[in-house]
Length: 106
Image 1: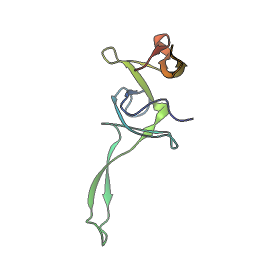
Image 2: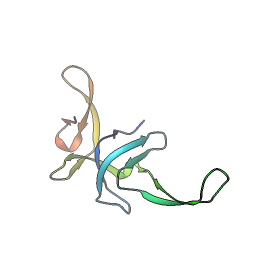
Image 3: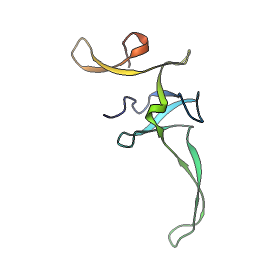
């Protein structure tokens, strides 16, 4: 199953070296279970010169495991929640926040 986090969501890192930091999701790789969060996972890669490119340093962004992030449901308080799926009154499948008594996530 893919991740329950979507591109554009505000997430908080709940474990690891960047624990407690929040940011917006820029990209998701569901097969690798990776989430790219802006401002988190930025590294420098040292590139060897070749016939096609000049050597030097290149800025890259590394993804973090999707299990290490939680969706932020209240930006002011910084509260997080697990994400589930449910049906709304029209019968469409929507995401719901478990810690907010199954409130629909917009």
